[in-house]
Image 1 (cartoon, helix red, strand yellow):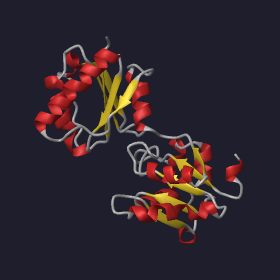
Image 2 (tube, helix red, strand yellow):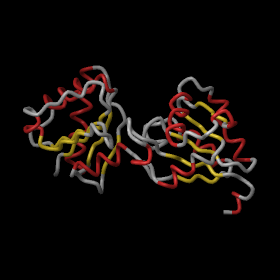
Image 3 (cartoon, one colour):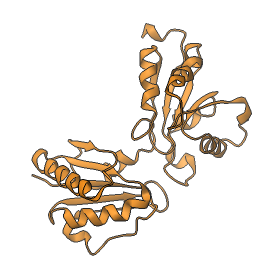
Image 4 (cartoon, one colour):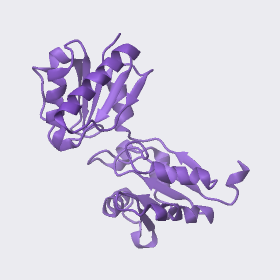
Length: 241
């Protein structure tokens, strides 16, 4: 603990997954923290500024410092984002949606923080992956998050069959996501190539007014296929052994 002396804390702050009032989904500690921190690491500046204003309209955004972390960020610059913490100031790392560092670029910042002896504090809040697992009814003792499946058709089918086999051999829930405009195509492929007794859950628009979660055998899904086009969704497969 002595390594933290004189340094600020890097707070990992989950953000709403959709168009909802932040107080409905953000933990009190997270909600309060963003109103007092002066330094923010964010994926998109405009989204972050809009979120902060929705939390507290009295915030003077011009007095805050933002560092953007996305695919355009020069990796050499990332460590410098933590300089305020080395000088004693707290920093908030905000996800674009949901929990930071999970299917999110923030993990590299956390790695730098640990190396520099900066305290890292993860706060509670929305997490589409964990919330979808909670709502699926699938194995929550053993699960794997894969990120995005392959795009190429043949490789995608092969990948689906492999994770289905892993689910059966390990009694493990397989979790993955897709770019929203490819959701319908992915669902069609899952229903076509997975075994009828394999369980499939789709959790869409989690924690919003449009939330939709359905979990059943693949054979039951074929008469209940929803339109997931451009809707954020998490997919889960489980083939109990």
